[in-house]
View 1 (cartoon, rainbow, N blue to C red):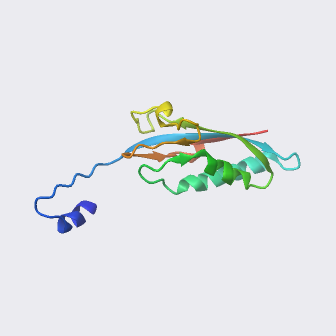
View 2 (view 1 turned 135 degrees about the vertical axis):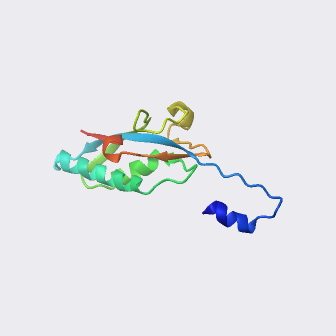
View 3 (view 1 turned 180 degrees about the vertical axis):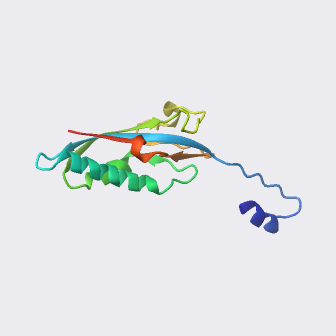
Length: 136
């Protein structure tokens, strides 16, 4: 659609190349501390639901993934005392896109977000498998 629209707007001598971005499949592991008066399974299930909803909205091409957004959303859940850790993982294998990049290349110097290349998009492909949480 974009190519068709651009053909009507460009000059005869203009040249426009449009490339498909490559996909980087990521996973999220998190550890939370739960108030002793709450059921761990219920709170952990609420955490999973919040993160699945967060990743239901697809990220844009080149958009970074901030761990602070995950910390913020999980800390809002009733029964959570603290979010102890959030880790990102690159997913690979037969069901995932094989992106030519490592986690070390994507991770920011302070370890708080994943820097996405301008020609790539981050995706949590299987939220039920790629998002894992531990409650203590």
